[in-house]
Length: 94
Image (cartoon, rainbow, N blue to C red; front, side):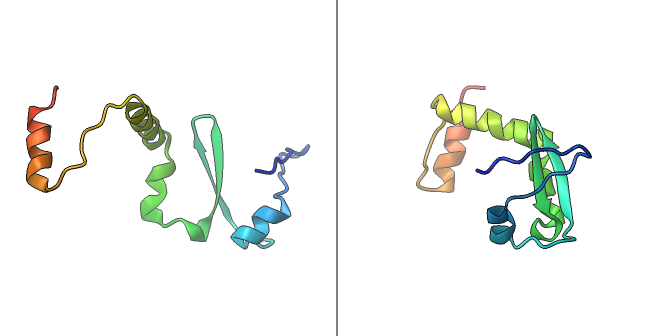
């Protein structure tokens, strides 16, 4: 991933490889979303309004929690059908 530098007036110049891949042109509007210690610059037209929740700090914290649980092996399944999944949920430790 190419690095960028913040200029004297807080401007950031996006690398050519990024603007070409995402087809970002001069004057394009980007959404700025902050999550944890990260910044997402998302072309406004690329992310449906109903999916913007994914980039919120609250959602990203839950994503990290789920990833950590998976890494520790705290998962069950796969299940062959819904009945088996429900049975496993009912007998799981609370």
